[in-house]
Amino acid sequence: MASDRPGQGSATRQDKANPDAPERVQKLLARAGVGSRREIEGWMEAGRLTVNGQPVSPGQKATAQDRFELDGKRLDVSGAAEVLRRVLIYNKPEGEVTTRKDPEGRPTVFDRLPRLKDHRWLSIGRLDINTTGLVLFTTDGELANRLMHPSSEIDREYAVRIFGEVDEAMIERLLEGVLLEDGMAKFTDITPAGGRGMNQWFHVTLMEGRKREVRRLWESQGVKVSRLKRVRYGPIFLPSRLTVGKWEELDQKAVDLLSRTVGLEPVEIPAKTPGEQAAHDRRRRKAPSRPGKKPGANKWQVADSTPEKPRAQRRSPGRK
Image 1 (cartoon, rainbow, N blue to C red):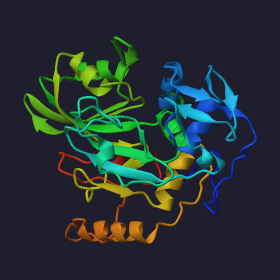
Image 2 (image 1 turned 180 degrees about the vertical axis):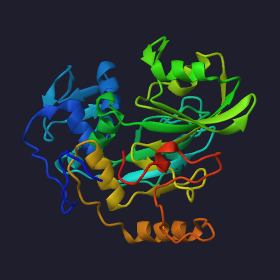
Image 3 (image 1 turned 180 degrees about the horizontal axis):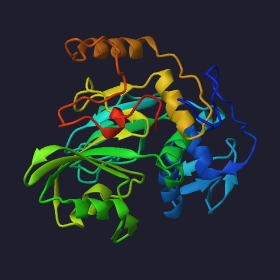
Image 4 (image 1 turned 135 degrees about the horizontal axis):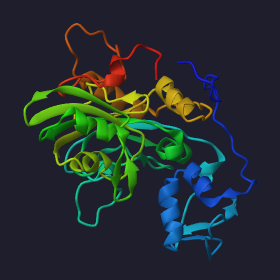
């Protein structure tokens, strides 16, 4: 895929960071894998995060040699010395929340993920409890931040079933923009995907990840979303082999693609431990296959039970 963004070389090494160079606290901690920038900024605002015993102030800089504590417990920031960039894709079922811990005791998307020794998984965006489909996780806070930040203009695609009458005028309004309680919002693409009468399927794309944005946009037009599933995040599709509640780690090529999409230099994925490799092989052997399909074909594409494939998948290769 052609691109004029930086970082087009192949991944041959782990990028090293200078641990003595001061940088913004949220950036340093995100690179260390202790949380996403948004999550860390929330800790700072709540007064939960300290550096060398003092509350962190907005814009404050620090180094990996400083002492960081969250709620009085010391944080391990040794991971800030190098970039560890692993990425998982997960097929979220209904009933799970996209938070690390839920005060109501509901299951979370993190419950099923593999455990890490010195890092932790960060979710890239959220899905509400009733929305299913693709969720990305990474160990790299900078990658997570760039993929979520509006300035990166990363599009998300959803398969949505609408209960109610949908006409061309409504679609035009949703494409031109609708004023919601938190500002203007719109879909960048709407494609009919089957159904008739009061139950129709569409594939919709938008460039933001505001809370319940897809549902609120449709509800602003007097119709109801009866089913919602994310099928793509940027260049990554939800593969048909990934059943509900299962996860899979992206390979080097796919992680490099994500990195370049947001202008990051690719870094080499660390080799799997023997235990991780054995678990990976078991999942691959159990993955369902479709008749007539060669193993590995269309690796990151979608062909699931929703009425039609995402519109982006029907575009010619090499197009964004």
